[in-house]
Length: 440
Image (cartoon, rainbow, N blue to C red; front, side, top):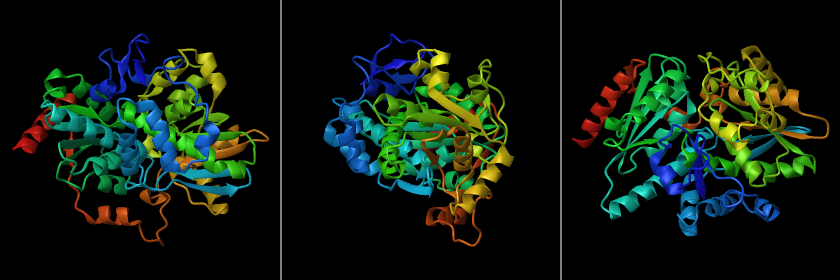
């Protein structure tokens, strides 16, 4: 697979180069080349959809990553990374949900992050054999769920240290426990600011040559291409599992959206031939993208705190990728997508409506359900993505039910996070200290 940059469509690098570098030097993001010589629709989509999830995912990712990774190697990575179920449920006639939260951290981030860990581990093994590799430091910012997936994927993984930044007081207590209680090769920092501050600090660290190369910094955020490719797989699974319920009706998938990597993966899946008639970009009160799609200038802004905290992003990192998929043609982008937003009042109403149908969602899934309802047309089958377990959030936890084991174990562990000012200089000191302690 050839890879280009969102800022330089003429750039061509390999997937391995993109995986090692995290992001291109021009300040853009890596994206697969589309069209001749790049990503083109699969000719055997029906045959692919007939396969079980993991064999199909291994086949899709093998087609994208060979010969840089042998087919058997990709299959082994998929078996290790995607070793949990993807569950489809009918909510009512014409509407279903795909639950993506049955992995170790109970969020959809497990798909991308666990596959990323497999990729980076194998690339490090190759470098060690060549005598070229030292320890790597995984640096990530999280608005809730990414951090938990990252620490679980990389905890105790040889050759890797993990540093996670999260906005203090802006994630759920259980999300914080998942992120900041493991210790060992994991350091968690509660940043005195918003997620956008965390994201900005991480970008500054990667741009600092005295940090990035000596510490072997590698990103686990959704800017990393390996995460994006792994997420493509569950859109094919959505099409496969929803087919009986849809009964031949066009499938419309609503995507809870914050940093917009999830939606970007859906658009790539469409390009590869996944039979999804339309994708719906669903945000909470952070309306940067819906406002743009409504015809206003693209204007990143400070994020707003909501019930669906993992989507509290005012400056979405992955949006340039989506614009690049449409060659900057905003009219074509608007023609392809559907969109909308749901504030907290609408989210609560959606949670109540889903309860009446006998389904308990998390706030992010409720946002997708609510926006989907306003965008679904006659004769279509709607599906929304449930991206996190409802027990992770005070709003949607059933106090009468026991916590899932993974959350109960996290809740019982002591909190090990440290406070950090929303300042790149403070992160620089923390990273150097972490690296020194890790090597002592």
